[in-house]
Image 1 (cartoon, protein in one colour):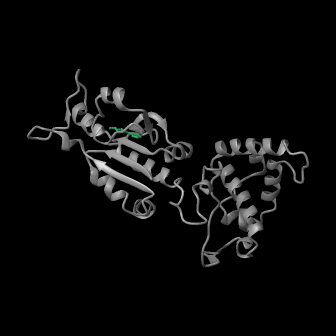
Image 2 (tube, rainbow, N blue to C red):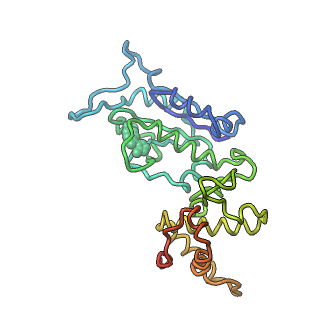
Image 3 (spheres, rainbow, N blue to C red):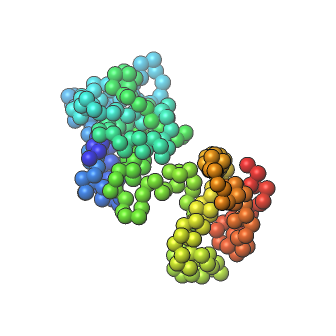
Length: 275
Ligand code: 4HQ
């Protein structure tokens, strides 16, 4: 079981978020444990002070080193990986979430105000991690985002048929659009192949639509995907199909206008395939 300890001034933020949905189920099934700890517990003064003004001035209070040290040392052991949430860290992606899901013990340090005393980072932190290029008011939402994303890679967390490997980004593609009842809504029909019941044909159709959606919305991801698929194709001895990009263009050109519309691909052009 992966153990996660979160060091935070707001333990309720963590406890609340991990008690619902997929995360809540993972914790209940003992596939994951998440515990929150507050440095305030290790203060000795009357006001339970956890922060102070920065030496040299500047705005924002800084979290005191001593209560953080005591909290870290309460939970840390030899196999712990200590992570500090910070915009200065590597930016989270699916590959990093998957790496982290294989650790046995993670400690997330969540800063508030102007952050934490640098000496805690120097002494205890193995890695700084960011969830994106914007500023949060605290590391808690960052820690929760990472916990949520990594939990999906723990075997047994997702239900049968579901898997993090099939999610967007795991194979480098976005997901195809999905539809449920009714078959017609606001004059838009569900694509015919999806109601036909041929699961092999449906699977191949979904993969192609995924690639087209990625081409339209994330041409950066698409270029990487098509590079990989073209290399695979070129290393094949016997070729039963045309090159991946050509196959995909043919598939698109054969899509009826109504289906392009309902898939959000109406404004994709033949020239967009020149990547
Ligand atoms: N922080 N990704 C906590 C972030 C952040 C991010 C700014 C971390 C404020 C106190 N964390 N400090 N981006 O913006 O993780």
